[in-house]
Image (cartoon, rainbow, N blue to C red; front, side, top):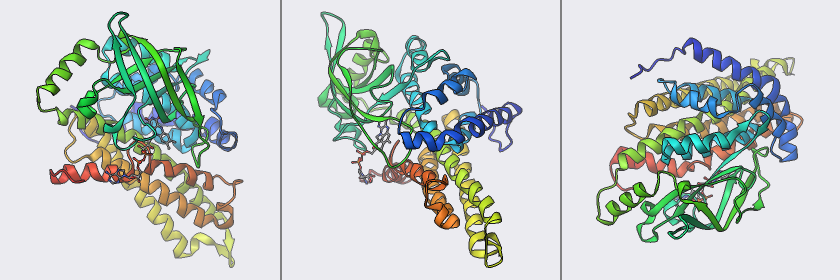
Amino acid sequence: MSEFSLELSEDQLQLQKWVHDFAEKIIRPAGEEWDRREETPWPIIEEAAKIGLYSWEFMAEMMMNDPSGLSMPIALEEMFWGDAGIGMAMMGSGLAAAGIAASGTSEQVMEWVPLCYGDASDVKLGAFAASEPDAGSDVSAYRTRAVYDEGTDEWVLNGTKTWITNGGIAAIHVVVAVVDPDLGVKGQASFVVPPNTPGLSQGQKFSKHGIRASHTAEVVLDDVRVPGRCLLGGKEKLDERLARVREGAPSNSQAAMQTFEATRPAVAAQAVGIARAAYEYSLDYAKERRAFGKAIIENQSIAFMLADMATEIDAARLLTHRAAWLGKQRKFKNAEGSMAKLKAGRVAVWSTERAMQILGGYGYVSEYPVERWHRDSKIYDIFEGTEQIQQLVIARSISGLRIE
Ligand SMILES: Cc1cc2nc3c(=O)[nH]c(=O)nc-3n(C[C@H](O)[C@H](O)[C@H](O)COP(=O)(O)OP(=O)(O)OC[C@H]3O[C@@H](n4cnc5c(N)ncnc54)[C@H](O)[C@@H]3O)c2cc1C
């Protein structure tokens, strides 16, 4: 077990600098263009792949060889400090990889995770498809069905997924589907849909408020047949689990909570990165911009906004690092992962709005990045569990009651 420490190791300081340099030189300067184009920034992803930043090996290194759990949030904060739309275009594959790692056997992880990334000469994307038009927060309401065909040892998937990051353009889609409709959320399983599988197609592509460099679309599954080995965790394990649920065995909700909570610090760190970008930019601006014969930061009303921003961002980062460390030790007690995500999302929205205020008219126009960062920040109150769902998880955890 690793001790919690605010002091980063030499390796983590190097990692932070490495990602920061790439974010500063390559990601940040490209942010405006790809936001305007609303397209996947393939050339930037290729650049990241060339230096090994966009690769399954990098993800594996951070997930497996970091007892503190802090490397992932450190790297993501820097990447999203560069630009959240481009960051998300790359992290969509991380969601798919995490979905495979959460339920798959080690053979499945080795077979499918590398295909979510490809290699520097031929980069690929992954997508994690859970949400549906009528089921976002309410994960028990998914309707996409998976039916086993014993004759061919295949699973047949039918349904529509929506809001899927990299949906339809990914090489690998990880799809959550219902295998036993009588069992609600416990009757679901995850499947890998391999590249070019007939029947999987992209539906509507959404035009978004923010993170516009990240592709978001519907995914339509029309009699998609995948081999038996694409069921994550395998059929034997699924059959055993379903049998236990049918017999009324208590579910291992503590283990499930540890797994869900563990992914949230990574999302929180992204939000911290956006908030910090806006804070640093508006701090510099406030020192330069003059009104009434002095720099605007010499007014307490501006300086105090910046003081509050610095304090809130540090608070969000501390919650994020605590949650990342607790997640790694599997020691969550009171939904600390949800606390980090809730706080960081709010801080990102609030800080980017305050930054716009500090820039005045320049904060409101697209020639300056702050309005884009504000648009980008809002998604952190919505995806990966909305603000209200985080509150619900925390409320249930602290009270021990089934708060509705
Ligand atoms: C840009 C983007 C990218 C996304 N990427 C992915 C992806 O890659 N994969 C994927 O599977 N999904 C993805 N999503 C989906 C995202 O996770 C959902 O949008 C989110 O979970 C909310 O679901 P919903 O939109 O259906 O809202 P709803 O669940 O309908 O919620 C609507 C409102 O009601 C509130 N609400 C709902 N239930 C309760 C309750 N019990 N108590 C209090 N308030 C409640 C919510 O907080 C929200 O304010 C993405 C979404 C967006 C916008």
